[in-house]
Image (cartoon, rainbow, N blue to C red; front, side, top):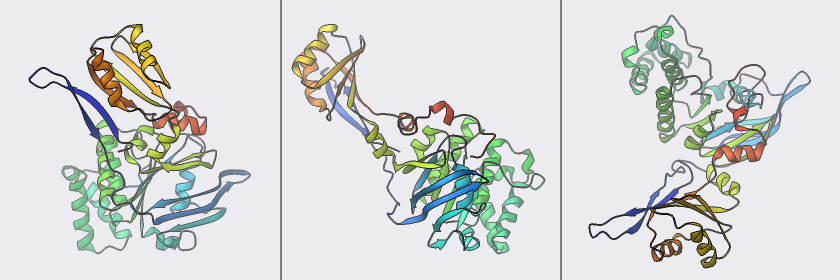
Length: 357
């Protein structure tokens, strides 16, 4: 997911001559996403005494998208989710969820949403299957339907072999998966996920990211908070950045990358270096570029405008230099976050704890 990446690589036919082909990896994000907002937030505020944790934020979430909500500890992420899900009453502002008033009609809204917090509220002594059946009963689901749905989810989340084990015997990754299953037992239109992969092993985190993608592909709108910025880049259609209780930016991952990229850069991996004279020759041949020799086998070319690769490929060929790869370099979402917020990425990744989030 994210900005399509284009990579030129050398191919070697049987005749020994080198040709260049374009390998284009594009991952479409927009399938199933509409322009209709399913969540609308207007001038939302939350005070704790004299401290204003959320300061008049406004944004919308499109139906069918994965919306990432990023910020450091104390930024207001969890306080915002608590207000959107009815766990905290706003001091001021409006919340509209699926056409319903998210403040006055919160009971009706809660039938339309699923909530997965970073700490499970399932019962330790109850087994996994019974936990799901019990959660389904809270939504008024009939016995036959809730038992069928629980079995389906145990299988979907690869927990069917652990269905009879008490929840307390589950690993952290298994607990997180069952908690997500409980959050979607009633097939909600919108799923709120607060730090779903924090504190679990790599394989479980990978499985949960895949489950999130699958749920979204089936039409579930997902509101995701995370401090793993690479996770947001991989999963989300759009991202909202919050810091000190204020929204500083809401945009698509692609647009964020484009805005952050001050110049276009391509790095060429070459079979043999041309020495310092190669950079000089490039500057003489092409105007308005800068050249940086990264290593004897790598040279980086930058320009303010889009770089057309074929003229450079022809130039290298005429110089007798074989190009192994031409890679278009793009800024990372980490760089975008630092630029927008002024907060170092290490602060975003700090373990949660202490203070309001």
